[in-house]
Image 1 (cartoon, rainbow, N blue to C red):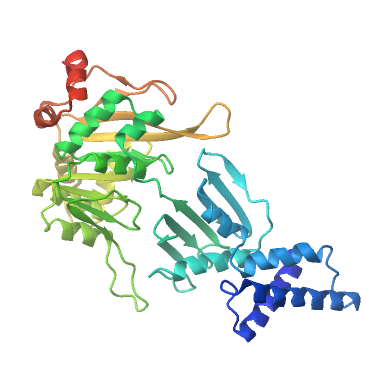
Image 2 (cartoon, rainbow, N blue to C red):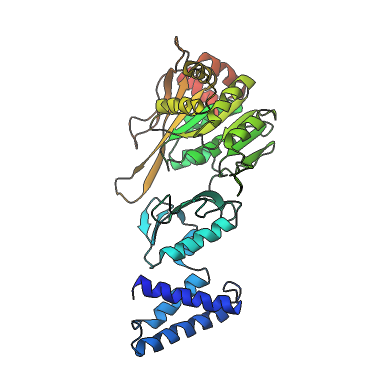
Length: 420
């Protein structure tokens, strides 16, 4: 049976169901009976030579039932807690298991079925996905996942990614248990967050930046005010003092947009101890220069191939604001306000079956004779898979003074036995 034959059958079945007013999700038995009649009618036409005979009517009925009642392969993958990320390209579905293994869905599906599921997910949000708005990002699955979808004319076919982030309540202790961090490095970062340090988390896509940012937020004292701004919300750390803010796309008429930059600007007037930006990609970076002048800490993630590249990427994003501020001024502000850059990376393990995410280095911003960035690694790995070790370098004096009132017992012992 070709996909064309199946799609014809599926559309006939949907027309029948629409004509009766039956809700397939609430009355699956009645919907299944209509589907059975649709298959039987098709087979009768096939025996008369009007259409091609179905090789396995029973299997076709089961596939139709799964699709029409909303239990198709894409839905089942989205509901599977062991699946971390799902990729849709037309009629093809691949998925990433929690262990990092990439697999292809074995059950056949059409692009129309996939698009129906994606449209259903988008329709439950305040976003749109149609010819006038062919790109959509939204929180879906009850806020436990982020959907990014692109359709024609921007893409040549449906292209979507659903990334689950139900585990974004990670802590530094859990990162140590996973091998991403060592205990001394985790204690150092915990003290930094208690001291309202400004930390940039960098890395390539899928390296665990959002999870790491969550762990840093979880280390902030509960009496500190955290204002977290995101394009599409992924962070879910419980906040005692503070709140989360999510950008809003333009309405149907093109107005009422609330950008990430707008959110960062507003939070500056709300007395934050720490401003968090889930992912810096554009002009919102310029508002972070104002955060530096406001005296509050900041934490954000940014896509970059190294810690030093991350700082350049942050400057370039700030310049997108078009405020006619010279680049050297932006660099000077960030050089004096950023304390640490944590770079993450991902790689496939030696067996080639799962993805490993690790913290590659923790760099401290150090004083420079020029209006530029000068950094020094405090903790680093020689390569992915190698142990993370203290480099022998001391954090700059300005950071050490702020850390002293906040060091934990673990960090104090580490400083006495190592750094000091």
